[in-house]
Figure: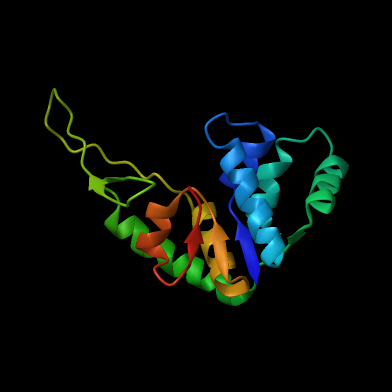
Length: 157
């Protein structure tokens, strides 16, 4: 089994996040026992900001047994298609990261619906890399992935 890892799971451990550090660590340990762990280029670049030198990031990945899986044309194409759908649908709502419920926010002064995109293209690249190169994705952002990656198995808090 191959488990892709979203940045939020690793940052919970690296920063550490009091609320999620232990949960995320246990999740990684559980899925490492079941097979391979991997990240894509986007997660790698997001993690790089947490290390003073690239050699330290490489040591962290080596110590944790996490491999770098490069995206291919298929995953990049799917990411573009899903990004297009997201930008067409999501300009007027917010989405809960846990359950996926959509909410609108209205300006109390002028009653205009406030537009907000909660996700950026990197989220779509992470999702499609997991979809095309892994069996599942470890992430806390399950609501978003349930909406745009229905066929992707997502595990996490």
